[in-house]
Image 1 (tube, chains in turn orange, green):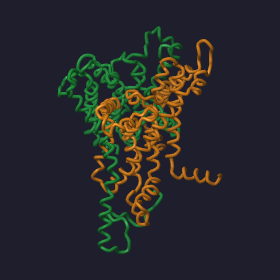
Image 2 (cartoon, chains in turn orange, purple; image 1 turned 60 degrees about the vertical axis):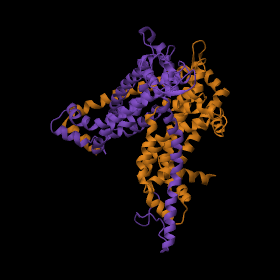
Image 3 (cartoon, rainbow over the protein chains, first blue to last red; image 1 turned 180 degrees about the vertical axis):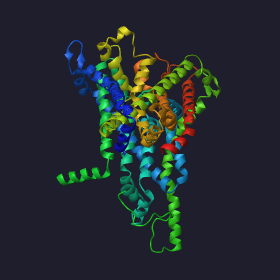
Image 4 (cartoon, rainbow over the protein chains, first blue to last red; image 1 turned 90 degrees about the vertical axis):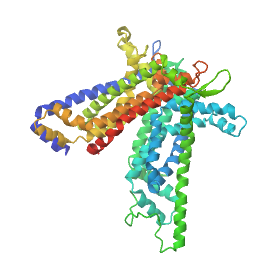
Length: 293
Length: 311
């Protein structure tokens, strides 16, 4: 089709057809310059010392920084907990709504998209007000819950807020995934063969939704790893907040950390295209691993 | 997908076609199905009520409440809203809207031009590379993006030193600098958003227009752009929302030297407000939600037209 169009266009309007790609190439080159220059300049910034010339001191320091390891570890744990909670809430809900409660489809869709209208900084304004009720609840059993919510070593409140913020990603990818499979037939086949409801969900529905689940999970994970506003306002120190704090006295180290976070995002999205690219390919890799072990 | 059904899809409620179940058994199963519908969705609605509904309602309620510093009693008042729309806070709100509008328009135009240039090359490999790179850059925002730009164009940034930009009076820590940084994640987002719509502009339309004697500019003016308008507007609304909500990039890059409402809310939450104005941050947040809602509302009536042509 594309070849045919190209031929017919060159035949009819040869001048525009010949001129057009060059404008496009120029646009793409300029875009490449704009997008690659900051990365190259930042990398140079991290290794260039005005006094000593090229040095990898910032990276060496980062590797031995205990605070950085702690902050990155906290970010990763928050990200995994967010993904786990988000999927545990969304997968059963969306499957049941698609199968049995079609009337709720719009409600769930709108509810999942509402966090897009309430910016993170507005959401955290509400959350911090709710958290400030703690003093009034000192005598009630709820006080313990509030203590657990903002435990410094693993702030549950961040997991809850991040889960709300990740709902749009999860909903969009799960919705696309559910549209792509004939869920009703799959579930009925599985149930008529004697599988339980939970067994059907875990062994039939989830494997069929795997690309959608992976894509929603990766996007949420990338969001949590880079999130700054909510954690900073509530006074916790995951990776991006640590990066800003350390930037006040060690510019090179924070830029190196920024490049690390670009690398992590890139790795995550690469993982996404490889895993979600094809179910069969994933299975092939798994089988191959099994035979080699 | 992998499991093909042996029988045509059944529409009934009862999943198991067991050999002629007794009426009583069928009734219990139906009842069980009815009972089993709800437990799966209850956790979701409970979670939304507690983790989103509660903060959102508190936000809306407290925005209209003032706590008397003397007695500690709270009463209904419009003072917060009035304060949040006057003086420095009004400047901040206007600054945010202006910044978001400008960067949304620029991102929409640049993203569309880049996506169209990409389609013009007709290279599948290039398209794949650009789409995956766009995915990475669209997710590269917040504090890391701010540091990348500080290292590039900041006072001691690599490019600043290389091109002696200081002599030209350029500073990253201004409105222009913020637009430049915001475009870094918004343009890729727009490229990814608009590509499917541009794919929908069929080559046959172009051929039909060309065989009627239309030039390329005429084709875009009378056919291409009208068909794409809803998608482009939808993209622009998404861009506006993204820019309007972002806080970290601006906070790290410029501190509070460029007045923006997100930074003012974060500052107010950190306690930098006068006594008696503790709920000011909530009123400002409410203003943000209202503006986001208004902008979203622009897009809804146009969606149907877009679906008709590009669906």
